[in-house]
Amino acid sequence: NAGVTQTPKFQVLKTGQSMTLQCAQDMNHNSMYWYRQDPGMGLRLIYYSASEGTTDKGEVPNGYNVSRLNKREFSLRLESAAPSQTSVYFCASSRSDLTGELFFGEGSRLTVL
Amino acid sequence: RKEVEQDPGPFNVPEGATVAFNCTYSNSASQSFFWYRQDCRKEPKLLMSVYSSGNEDGRFTAQLNRASQYISLLIRDSKLSDSATYLCVVSNDYKLSFGAGTTVTVRA
Image (cartoon, rainbow over all chains, first blue to last red; front, side, top):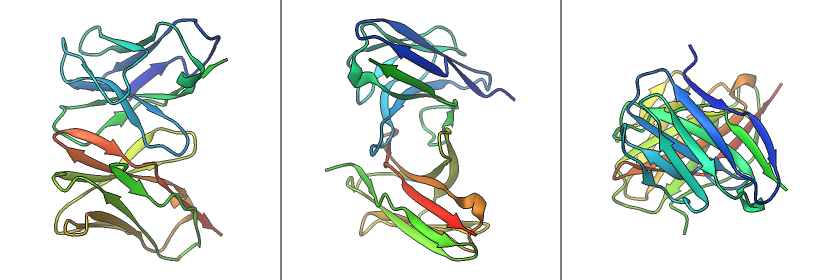
């Protein structure tokens, strides 16, 4: 049971570099999300996709872009990484955006130097 | 003011003890409430939903107090495996707001 799979699990970038975090779910869920988690703060929503073909900004979208490639996959791109983007990133999915039950991937730890 | 606030703890309790902690939320129109559990360096996982009348799931009891705008989680007969960070989650217009978490450490 793979659930939600994120890659890579760890990444170190230099300021200004770009990268894409990949996320895939095999639960046939409609909604997918990208969160970041920083010490002392709750998870903050970066972007979400309520259904295939739609994406919307969350609480902290600046510096990020997303693509809902198909129903299974939702990627997060950092075009020009900044040290403030050092964080743990979680992808999540849910049956719909009407439910509070999210299934999370294992997280991607990103360090920007 | 944060939408969801939690006492970060840590709550250090011996095995078998009862531990309880609250979470306050700022938006009185919030509709749904949840507790998630997050083990160290792992992903959050849904522990339980919180219903208006309160609900139990084994050793875990969740309560909602709309008048005072807080939810609570009580863990009875604590096990070593209950050591984790417990995240309070509040839903308003289908937007989920996460608290920063309360850390519980159960010692032998």
